[in-house]
Amino acid sequence: MEVATLEPFTPVKLTLDLTDEQFFQLCQNNRDLRFERTATGELIIMSPTGSDTGNRNGRLIQQLFNWTDRNDLGVAFDSSAGFKMPKGGNRSPDASWIQKARWDGLTEEQKQQFAPLCPDFVVELRSASDSLKELQDKMREYLENGVRLGWLIDRQNLRVEIYRPGQEVEIIESPGSLFGEDVLPGFVLDLGAILY
Image (tube, rainbow, N blue to C red; front, top):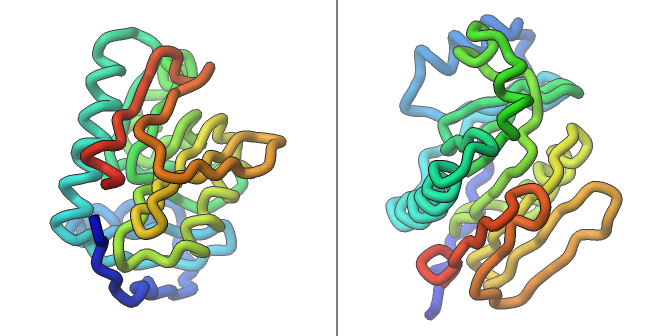
């Protein structure tokens, strides 16, 4: 299947001096936009994804949530959830998961805002307009902040990049499925409706 190639969308980047509360309020007041913030305070304004990417991301999230519902190991999140990274910045992976004990260790107030931690597991699904380099940089940032397993699903190149702490990035060409390893034991992501 041929994927349409669009020019990568360059997200708008501004440097603003915002407190955590101001950044949270900015996100709440502009729910139609997606915001992230780098560790250096750069505000990133991202466009909504196209409909096709939204559908594929929904299928990814559906599988992660179904697996999460069948066990009591943790909590899953969609792309609207933001996290305050331990080394600074605020990020919103396309899909993510946090081990139950870590989630339960947060206060109710922390859960209501941007949880002050990096998820154990993250997924970024590259849309036709995403810059591969920017997504790879974001995956490295997750690693620096403590993610235990990360998947960058690159539809344009029909491959997946797997990120693990202390290891080289593993690239798998045209995979049919991915396995959650010891982070998400028993989780198998069927890539049929996501990658192809």
